[in-house]
Image (tube, rainbow, N blue to C red; front, side, top):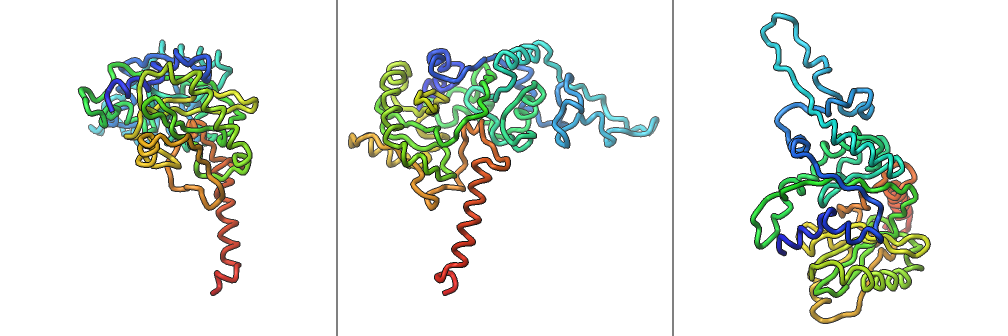
Length: 334
């Protein structure tokens, strides 16, 4: 993998070419001061100056200079240095305007990654954001974004840098009716589509068994008509979403191998399929026994919902019911 292959997968690079077949997105260059703010772990967790405790998520993060721990008696000689909260007024105004234009709710993403690992800190358990304060807290709380900020080129054979010269924040329109079972990862080797995998592999969706053949045809046609001639790398992956009216939307691009998950395939299998010229294969979770609960994935797991009634909640319910059935079976008592 080359640096140029990684660079092509940055959202600010691919989105302009695929805007007409993707999710509506506004992209803003990050001030370098904000990028450094995301990386700074040398002191207390300070929210931007514009964010008061009332604006922060309940029972989550507060401005530490307002906490009792930072209060000392006058003249004690232990007075701490004054802590100045970071301030990004122009950047915040642009973000606010974009959120309003996109309908009032977005999910954030940097050049390559979304802060999916910090979704737990939001009140909804998702990456849905309606204010700059929510975006700042999700980004500042995420460990996965360290990949974008420090390690994006670690797997490159021609690595010359550890970070891109500029960072970007993409604000992607939030769709509340997003169906995770209709998201798929597509694997391209030598400019040929060699495999497609269900993206959310922690749940069995019976409806996919019925739609499998149709979905495969739709995605293959979409690749030939819209992706193959536009994306310049030979080897890569891309994620798509199939809508209820059978339109295909590009969600993301990722490099072949390295930190990209092969999901229901292995990289060895995909390499072999490409070498031997096998027919295109779409893999889905065929039964509840086929789910992979331990596999770390991401719906535009940017969209991951762990609240009651969500896919994750239903998965845990199903697993519990199956365990109870197994313990009651004759074989269990043998």
